[in-house]
Image (cartoon, rainbow, N blue to C red; front, side, top):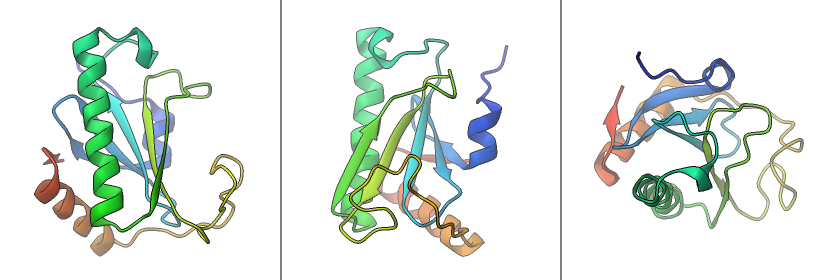
Length: 138
C-alpha cells in the first residue's frame, strides 16, 4: 500500500518534495517559514522510531533548520513533534525572529495574520532546497 500523508496536513500545506526519509511540506501561511516533515513510517511518535530512522529524521530536521537559518535568514528555529490534532508523525521546523508575526509567542494559536505564497516564491524555495539539501522536488 502506498504511503499517504494525512489529509489535514495536505489541506494546510504545500507539498514540496522529499528528503531521503521525510516528505517536505510548507505551511500555506507565508508569514513564517513553517516546514513540516513527514517521515515515511507508520510509527506515530518520534521517540518510538527505531534508532536509525529517528536519527535520520532528526538529521533531516537539522538540515531544514540550517536551511531556514542560513538560506532563508531566520535567526531562530522552533522544533516540535506534537501530533495532538494530526495523529500521523510529523515534525515542525519553524523559522522565528524578533518582530515576526507572533513573536515571542508560540505560533500555535497566535499566527492570526495570513499571507499566501506566490508561485514564484514556492518555486524559489524548492530550488533552494534542491541546491542546499538532499531534496527531490515533487
